[in-house]
Length: 87
Figure 1 (cartoon, helix red, strand yellow):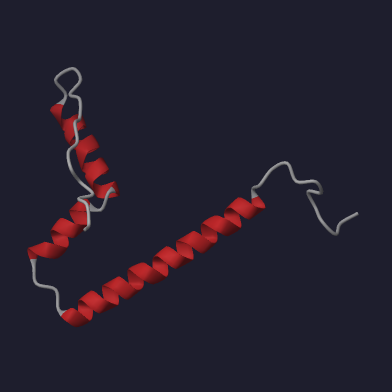
Figure 2 (tube, helix red, strand yellow; figure 1 turned 180 degrees about the horizontal axis):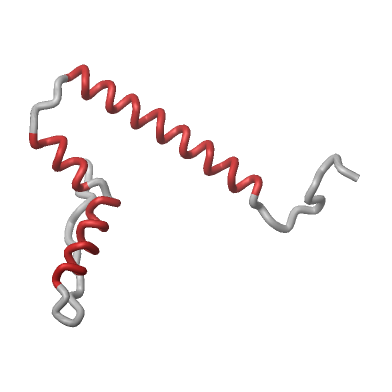
C-alpha cells in the first residue's frame, strides 16, 4: 500500500503577510512534487507519453544518484592520503 506523500502542512503567517506564507506553501508543495502531480492529472496523458515520462524520471534519478556519489567521493574529508599517486 502506498502512503500519501502529502498529508498536511502548516505555514505560519507572520505580521499578517499572507503573500509570503503562500509563497512558502507553494515552495513546499513544489519540492514535494505535489504541484507536478496536480498538473499531470489536469489533462489526460497518453500511455506513450506516460512511459516516456516515467523512463525519463528513472534515468534522471539514476544520473542524480551517481553524480551525488561522485561529488561526495571528491569532497570527502579525513582521507589518509588526500592526493593518491602524487608526490
